[in-house]
Length: 205
Image (tube, rainbow, N blue to C red; front, side):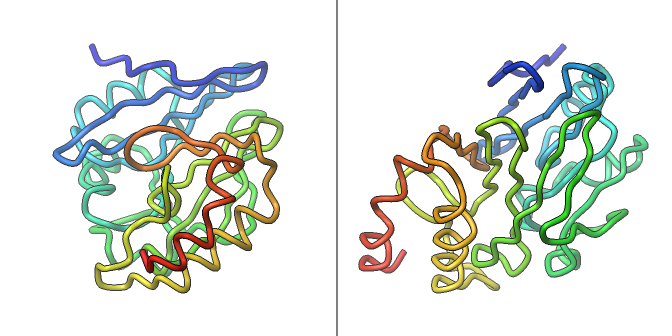
């Protein structure tokens, strides 16, 4: 059994985390405490573990933060197991298959939870973050990490675009106490990272 780790909880939500694959991807499962419904973010790898978690935690669908190979390895298996997978149109061609398209500034219901989509191009053209309404939580994919933005050296990466995304879509609107849960590694907060934006611009990565 691979229960994952209970990473965060409050009155409305539980977030479980499992680290998988050769580059230690964070897979998050967001679960509504009132209804038991859940969603999985990034079917990255080790599909047996993910499908086991999905069945035990009430996952209804899978959301991809972006289309890079390390975040999508388990997509065919979770689709075969009956879970619908969503990705942005701009990154959809990176996936072998998917079921629905994620639009910017949409609200995804997870039981009684409301998960807001935030298009944050730069790491990939279709990178997306997800903000949980009523809880200080942002799933940032590979857009924002402790110490800076995600890499933009790969095909489709755009450093000026990721800086614009971080500044205008994350740093300006979100409160300082927002917990940033990235696609790899440890959490950080908006307040911790915001003062360093100009440093990142100056260094160029």
